Image 1: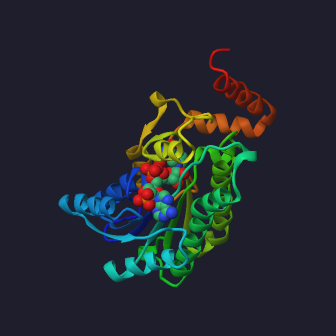
Image 2: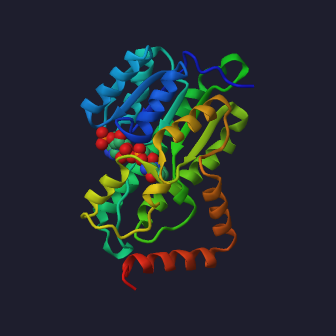
Length: 278
Ligand SMILES: NC(=O)c1ccc[n+]([C@@H]2O[C@H](COP(=O)([O-])OP(=O)(O)OC[C@H]3O[C@@H](n4cnc5c(N)ncnc54)[C@H](OP(=O)(O)O)[C@@H]3O)[C@@H](O)[C@H]2O)c1
């Protein structure tokens, strides 16, 4: 049975650009009320205006996911604006290129705070809220989505903190999914492959402008809308993991089966990056 999303409310962090923005628009097109959140108010305002211009319902909250109380404020805002909340998408996140020995403690603290701790906080707050409400039309009480990544399944050289933060999201979502399965709360992790968003520009800026990590070649990157459409399908028919690339999923399954082979492939690719002339 497909869940009718019309009139249900979703709160989305990191919705001022990229995957969050595209998901907000796709959810609004599916009839959902949307609360978008991020730090840049002008971009949030633009998303809300675009949704309203297309006949949808949206509002925004300016927040930094790493601030204590901001995730709670987001849920309150959804209730204030639309009277109910059905879903959250913990999507805010960023990447940082560093060798493990080069991170400062402050950099490690920040990336785990934004990518992992904040998404866990929002997931737990949402779960507490959803458990207090009744399932709608015999369906779910609520649906929690976290934006992990395909790299959650491997330790990416020069991107270890990022891939580890995404792996933590994946593990917690998996455990929560089973813990809440019999309580009618759905929990899904989203595992995008390289996606055309501001993500890589931000990572480059934060990393000092030099690319040192293995990344998806530009020609293989997907549009953010591909991820957004897969998320709407998952909201309609809840499932555990959202993937948009079967070949990548198969490759990562192989990496789990044969970790030494996967490490060898990564080492080969990293050497090519380190010595492009060789
Ligand atoms: N692009 C990819 O290839 C890719 C692949 C796999 C997974 N992902 C994941 O997808 C998610 C979205 O990334 P994206 O690709 O759409 O990149 P993006 O365009 O850079 O979007 C990142 C969003 O996160 C927000 N954000 C960052 N730090 C924040 C903070 N402290 N508080 C509140 N909002 C914050 C940014 O908004 P403000 O700057 O306005 O705050 C922005 O809206 C991330 O979790 C990323 O790890 C991306």
